[in-house]
Image 1 (cartoon, rainbow, N blue to C red):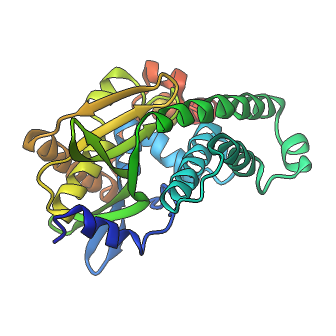
Image 2 (cartoon, rainbow, N blue to C red):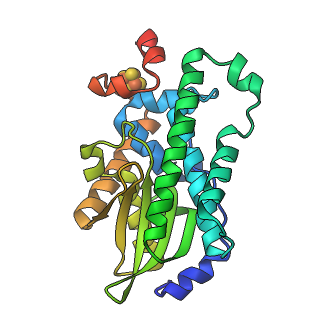
Amino acid sequence: MLTRTQSLRDLNNKIQINDLYIAATPLDINNKVMVDISDIRDFTFCARYYDLKNKDQNEINIRNLYDKSLHRTFYAYLLALQEDRLDSTLEFLKYRWGKEWIKHKNTKDILITRSSVWRDSYEKLRKKGIDAIFKFNEIMLKEKQCPIIIGHKYQIEIIPNVILTGTYEYVRELTINKQKVIQVVKFITSTNRFNTNIARQFDLELIATAYAFKETFNVDYFQVVSIEIETKKITVNTYTEKEYNLLKETVKNVVLSIQNDIKCVSPDKHCFHCEYRNICINTL
Ligand code: SF4
């Protein structure tokens, strides 16, 4: 068990930036089920959304692509900060965002094979990303901080025989009122369907991250923080056994539903914010 900041730093020697959103369906490994918290979140939003997202080979869901690219940009910045090789913070972010957003895409990809709506959204999000990195830079420069964990996958047996995976986006050490405090941070990067007041009150991903951190490192005191990039709002969240038990119950029920192919479709006003509504309406 790790109980000290130094131990967390030692662990970080082995840490690399990992892919987000790895699992598509619960996997059976040694008679244990492995499922990613992003899939649990998608399933609770709408089972059909979960299905369509996992079949999405052509990145129709451009908002997820944006979210992923922006997170990679942030992680690269934080890694450079950790390794003390960040000369010009804004230049680094601009370069990295450009690289993340246009990489693997040539002119043909963007201009010929895509619809004009897709191209418009692509360009709009490119600009939105520039705005986001400026804000991210301001937020990061405000506090002197020591990065401990960056974009690292976790896995934890959350209930018997079910292993939950997810990502520690960012764990840092700050000095607040002369006290060293560890913060487990989540970056909220876009105003999508998961960024509503209700979703924020019970943020499954953040609760799961807090639970995995608490259990894995046996740390009694740490803060769980969400940072909304667009508004620069920083919120310290408090989770207790009540939230952790609710999380376990949710994971258990979603896994059982997927395993037994019980998928309730829930068309509602949230469909207006769903990237798959055109495909979905055709198939309902
Ligand atoms: S349009 Fe509505 S019912 Fe269809 S996948 Fe999206 S949220 Fe679910």
